[in-house]
Length: 319
Image 1 (tube, rainbow, N blue to C red):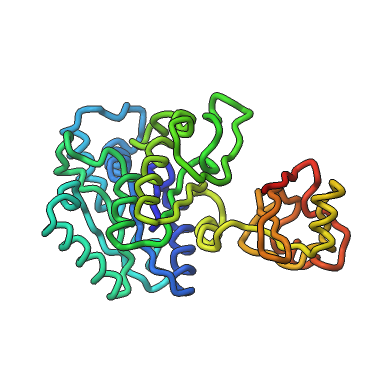
Image 2: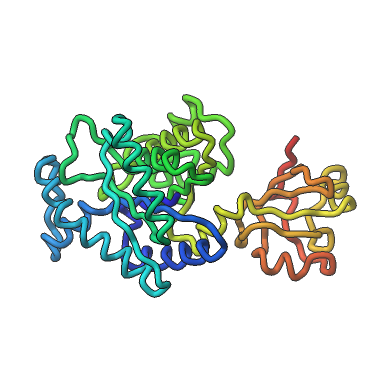
């Protein structure tokens, strides 16, 4: 399940993501998309020159979404077309998850689309949504659809690297929270409020969606939509390196840096400065750190060069 927010729905971004979706399907994965952007696309069509502030009147926004929805779907179909794949539009409303008959109809439609080899592209039915009972943002919709189709993974794509310790627009020291074991009140406070001006969701809504998804046993990843290979990285799980016993001893007992000579394996896709897990020969994670080389270089050099992979200043031991 891949959810793309309004701020990330551009022709260039959708085209790139469709290539990643096609690659994932080639590896045997089934992909369902939840997309925002109908209102943004409609407003851009009505006012192509720009300069006019987006209205707040719900009735106007509903009408604008009707203008933008087919443009949004055209963007997704154009992106999937080169791979011989069709996009199937599915518009849902909150009642589809409350009324059992509608719930079963929605599930049946999604399953049939998947059986037909179509990529379902889901959105809230904004044109007729009741303001009092609508989803409010597509993050929650994505979590509910993930449960509906019994997804194993929910990827919430956004315009930030992921869940951060603070708002990066206000705090330059904001850092990435790599892993969340429990969503508590402090984490919800850190997540803050609404996100971009073109969307209705922010990090708080993504955290709420992750909470819903994890209740259903769906692993959730919040990631940067602009990152190359973001979907493959999420599917691969946490990137990491496996080291031999000598390297583990050097890291845990001598405070040394991790050298390529001690690396015996690499998993997942990572770039220089990405956070990775460091695993010993027994398969247990004993450290985390920021790598100085991309995955391809680490894999090429492992076991035979003294190049630093993770510097000791960028490494922390975990228990």
